[in-house]
Image (cartoon, rainbow over all chains, first blue to last red; front, side):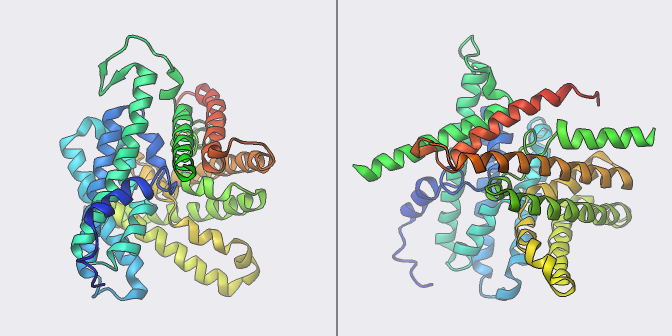
Length: 203
Length: 195
């Protein structure tokens, strides 16, 4: 579509972070939001991995959109996504082997993220390369933001540390680092964000 | 030895390492279809059968094609191709062969290809070097585990519809908190057998 000039890039990024936040608003791609967020470092690394895949997929799909026959577009998108996920997977395995040992499976499963496929289908296959790039950055940052918040609270309250460094010498809420605590943390944060947007609507 | 080991794999996959409660996979589907008991049961049946067949297919491709050719690094791309292709094929075949069954379970088939468990099982099978029988049993155990989780959750959510939940928590947030409580109960299984 020829609306490149009218699209505000800043709005695209804001949209991804707040209005259509993958985890808190759309409730998609929830698996890693609980699995890897029991410490801040893993949460941030996972967020960066997703940001990278989302941006690369968007800017790969966008220039190819005129050559892909609509009937076979989904398999092609899946191929592109799994190609970039393989790249991410191998890079992580080479440069961050320790973190990879803990979350390798979840990195590979970025392939099955509904949100990445959805953005390729809804946005990148209809827009030119620059808006797609910024849309990818926005959605990826939204995801990174959500994972950072969840893992920040879980590590601080569960272990009393941040990024592996001890900050308070107590474990106020040990349950948060247990698997079950992940569900509680995400549930409470979602409730909080709903409450915020409801307040915003009212006044 | 074999039978005991297979039994261990089933117990471990369905209860101790339950995909939903301890590995946190398949959550989108889990929260999506657990609103009603009927859909939960339909999903569990479709899911378990698709998973067993697709993990058998991926095992054959992995061990007889990818390992000899030394292309195991392509496993993500190839497995997702196998799963998506198989789901599409069974969709088409089922529509022709038994329209009744398709009418009941067809909608779940379309959802399955976006489920991460269906991809995780072949990936874990390849990572753990399971034998053919072991990977089938692992897929069966994971299916049972997913079914248990879905059915427990569906029966709770049917009651939850009637409860007076604070407004910001309605829908997904309260479902998360309920899942947390169930997951807490499932931690009790963790000492059941030594692996």
